[in-house]
Image (cartoon, rainbow, N blue to C red; front, side, top):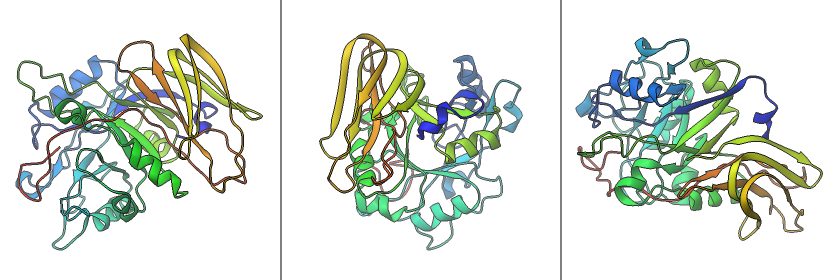
Length: 335
């Protein structure tokens, strides 16, 4: 996320941009999913069903659920061959048109991602820890806007919901990329259908809760990702990054490699993290991370202030976890 979000016009809207309905391998119809997210205080939702032939390549139309205080963004989880491990790509595309063409014969994951971006979508490298994506995989999706650094379903189903290591690797190359927290909810755990939902979200700074405004803000990095804590303000004062937030036990400013600045205490609400420019080429700071006082709630925040002479590092990020192994074909391995 860009630190510019806190000075941008508008306000923050809460949303989830990775979910699956009964149009693919989820259990709930789209209408019920919209109802549940709205009831939980979400401002927007994207239902991103699996864009596969045995589901008839769905772009689930949720526009009928749009109201003054709740909107949906059309999207899908795209699949095509093949990652470095030989598995189908999982590429999150939010903001697709209803007439987005089915995956072509011989179309690769990177080609499909490029086509989605050309169609206006915000494209994310989905749940990298879950199916073992490498830095080479991330580099193959050279135009992707973000990496999922927390995927709640991956955490619940397989303790592989993270993407922090891949994010650090990509930022270390000097590439500008955002970090995303999502649910990837399927509502499919018997006896506890909400268990893989409402665990990771984004807060988008926009002038209006409208799909076009939200997408424009996301592409500009005007959002942060959270599992609980809220960032109320963030700005630079000289060589200090000042963070104001909901009560937290830790505020950590992370940088390349082992670089980190920690502020710890009970109920931290505001802290200035001092950063010292490094003589190491490209050793910029990447992002702050907040840990809430409650258990298991980690949030990663926006691009911090940095000296113009340093290479650009941007991002957000929470913790790690996710699902079972993906297969190359068929219904197995869908998330």
